[in-house]
Length: 480
Ligand SMILES: *Cc1c(COP(=O)(O)O)cnc(C)c1O
Image 1 (cartoon, rainbow, N blue to C red):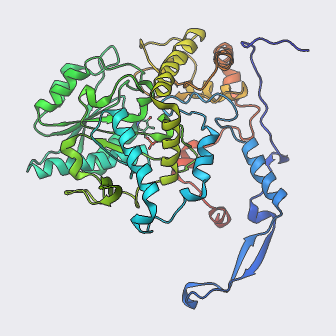
Image 2 (cartoon, rainbow, N blue to C red):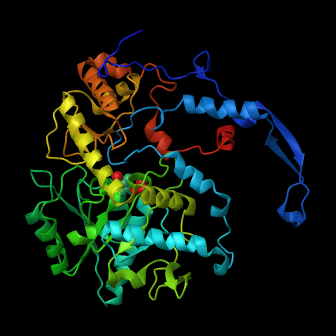
Image 3 (cartoon, rainbow, N blue to C red):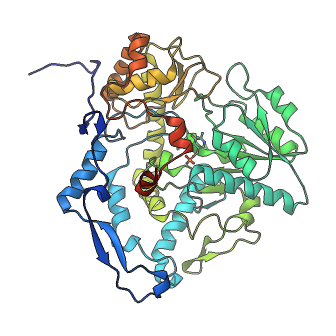
């Protein structure tokens, strides 16, 4: 029997079917197609007579997807400490709940016949409100970023209803890019807020940034360096004193679960990233959900419909001064159902335990790695510096050691930043392996880093073009 230590450096070879240098796993439509005749009672001008569809046996199909998954790296491959993104494993029991035939009903069925669904949605609204210290929650926005946008529209509607035209949203320079985008899309001028020397909000800079023009301050806590904003009560007072609203970016709620509530800190509204905090699927462009919680005064502006309790039942209604729809019905319902299953199964104690372990794991990992971590004490994540190494190269090299890299080069306040969030799901053994991978990269020379990754299916890809010029269907590849 081979003996091994948890701290042994692992090497990883990703599957790679190829012909020569090209990765070989054809698209389904490239494997085999079949022309099928279309027979339908729909009007002729809306239909085709013939369609070309992939034609494969079940094993061919199963192998196709298994191979694609083997040529990829996911939360079920190994640790995935992509800071701020909270890449948790998605427990399978939530899939079972979402796959229940009674979970998928057409939302246009009569309310009388979907009382059970409305009840779960209502209960989830209540659970999230309790967790965040909010008075009401809408489930409608389909992502954190969409939640931010809906939240800023709510803030805008609130100020307008008070006859108060405000033009600015204040955002710390360490904030997630979506904060700036949401404020700008809602028509606001963004006022950037530099961080203080200790990585937190600089109260003097905040005082200078706030004015009668301030519609809101958007903040996450702990912030993107993992640091708790200790002055949050004073920050809230300062924002409220100029008539602004305090918006909580819920991406880091994982650190606070069951221990602290944004509402109690003075936040007026917030979004929840259920795909981060509550372990619903995440990434790859799949559906997420970004419910928004608000304090009592903002409740009337919530999106339409909202769900309330009636005498003996539940119903949809349109809040009095609703900002309208930001998505169909109650949002990405099956994702929300998974969050409901997760929250209900964990309960108060389980949620508090999750945040305790998230913080413990980040602090344990930080102790094991030979990297400078300029800011602390941190909570569920930390930002290490790759020092003289290029953070992006270091990240690519980590793949060779079988771990997904951390988030790189953000926030910019740390040079060559490696924003690392192991999450509560990892065991001590996995954290030791993760630390071994970090330290192996630390010891690698620049040549090894620049060549990396060596053993993954795809090597260096052109990330900028992939983001700016995405080809989302095989047809667009064919058009090239
Ligand atoms: C992930 C994230 C967001 C955006 O959330 P999405 O659900 O990805 O749209 C916003 N702020 C922070 C700090 C985040 O980490």
